Image 1 (spheres, rainbow, N blue to C red):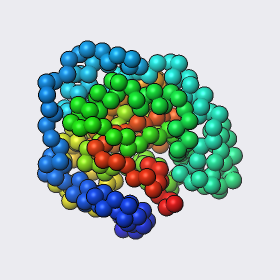
Image 2: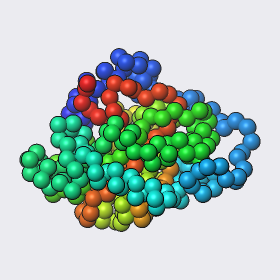
Image 3: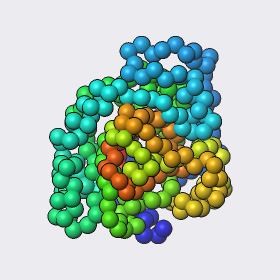
Image 4: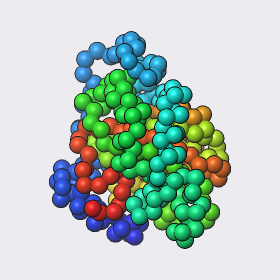
Length: 302
């Protein structure tokens, strides 16, 4: 725990220097009392089930909001096949950056060769800001239904805080540090803002062996005291399961195009793939402006 805090301290200090309000959120955002004070009740009438004109998706807005408020997660946002294909084509033809290292760029088909050059496991390959070059990603981020869901759930005008496209690769014998940096192998909660909502889409088929996302339903609202008075966001999976119940542990599998929305303050994690590489898109919204000094998830200071 101490090593993790020390490793991230320079990043946190620089983030706080850029935006002192971030430090207040980071210090108090883990406590349910302060989150509820900062989270107003939705205003106006509950939304109807009218389709959002021009949307890529056909999900029911009231159903999605009900699931989010109850469980913290809602599935059923299917991305049309043509956009799955377009994002896959983009990912396969552009270099990604291994383990967030901008000096370790490679095409995904050359993952094993990149590992051999690096001399260590490469669990993830992120596209960082190059994801902005993919038109389909921009369509998802500005989709009318996506924005309506975010606005109603956040009870505020949603502000983009993350747009990530990345591969999760099978890797032999990754270290604890490798797993931590890849957000795999340990349940954690996000502290990106006072209120956040993230949308995820699988761009490859994801079964139980392919590193599926795992979510602890209900932990966005029902939080043990020891998970509020904690200096770290990551906790042992067995401890989290014991605290919130195995019945609430949701392993999210689905075919390419399968999407889901989640409150990322709940405990969640990506599992290590034992099968094939997993390609995943994340579009996140909050109520505050995201730090501009670094790309979401990077530890490297620029």
